[in-house]
Image 1 (cartoon, helix red, strand yellow):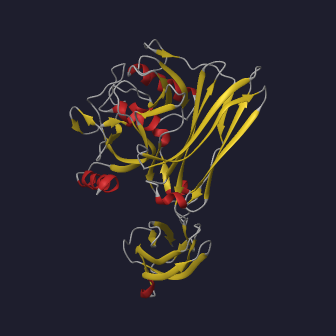
Image 2 (cartoon, one colour):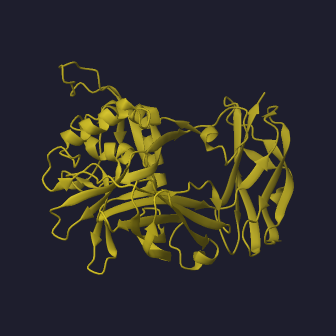
Length: 443
């Protein structure tokens, strides 16, 4: 049943017992594995030949699903001894990722404690805090792990939480995902990058004895370096299109620098833990005068790499060494490649037990045909033409668009609900799980 099914079961069980409960999805969900750091850490070791070896201590999953149950917490008090402060939504996890007190369990943890960085209030609060608000930190580490130099710290790389919802009178739009869910990120943390949010992170780090450069043995602050590394941000990428990582290195200082740059593009599974290296590019002893700019690009054919890829997450990491200062810099960019969208458009409103005509379409973004395509559907609408419920649609040529009109009749039940939904899925020999959803309001 897995990470999606079990939270639904837990929601049902809690509601059957009279406990308000809902499923929560956390996108870019951090998985912290150590007991010393709340950050999501990557160790980089410099080899004798000048190359670097990476060790990923923690990981960031594409998403993780847990539950919130509403309850009072008379067992918890704040620092001033007041009760009731931590009543409300409590995190519980049907699919816990780490052992707690020797067994796989998680929570209950007050959401209010997570937001304020009170990592010792409730159960497993520190782990949940890292899931939604941990910094991603790259370290340069010696082999004995006695010396740590921070290479980079991304402060907004993890944690966007939401609960399922549907905005009334609005058909599904995959490119406007915020209309399909209720964003509750603000319940778990202050605005990303704000003074309040950074203060909470520092509070949590101190409470959990984190590596935050406040006297922890062996850690050194990041060196100040005039070389800047920037990877151009990439928008939505669909399977079959070309993925281009573009690096810009710039000397912003007042002296010439000799720089060696290594770019590596890899593919990983949804946990971000296992990867396959797809492409590499290096520049050695590059002389960069004051104000000089160097642009490097790596192109990935997402269709071609499908043969060796283990997932849909692509990462470009760049590591640079500066000869004059003997300093090291690192940056990275992560992109998720999506299936082409199944578009379903139609009226926003319909009479009860009425009918609507919707248009279903798919543009094949791949450079090969989609063969033996089938369309299936289920929901609170039914096809007037029964032959369209499970439809063989044949092949869709490379770069071509397929579409069909379908007449749908509203289901009678549930009578008291004024929304009707239908889910559709297109499968082929080449790819599966091309999905779309349509919603209509009853009047």
